[in-house]
Length: 124
Image 1 (cartoon, rainbow, N blue to C red):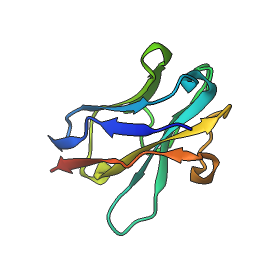
Image 2 (tube, rainbow, N blue to C red):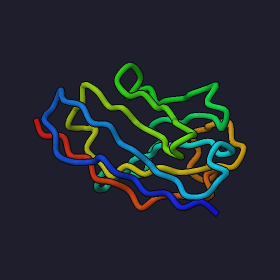
Image 3 (cartoon, rainbow, N blue to C red):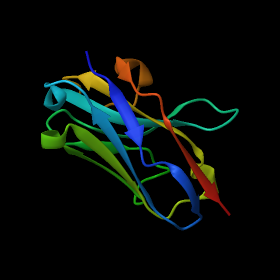
Image 4 (tube, rainbow, N blue to C red):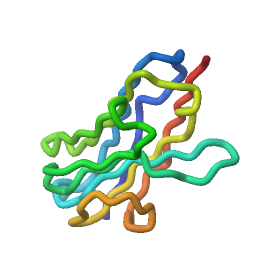
């Protein structure tokens, strides 16, 4: 069982940066691939980025490549999403999710454990 709590969201101007954090409970965090997803009002949830359980590979959506970076600190049971050059279209609720022994794929259904989300709003 893993519980996930996101933090770090907020209001930022276009071009600005934010770092989201997702803290996980439990002693087996290093066994989980971690993913970030987002959902904007009136739109379907979409994949943002993921990192394998070993941290050896990452995957990100084309819309955020070069701007967002996912990383993890297993000693702190935390996964991060560094977001630079933010755009108004990045406005959404951002969710983190965990997939036991996962490779870090882009399918929401692969992730058994999900957080409650944190709001990111980018003003133009």
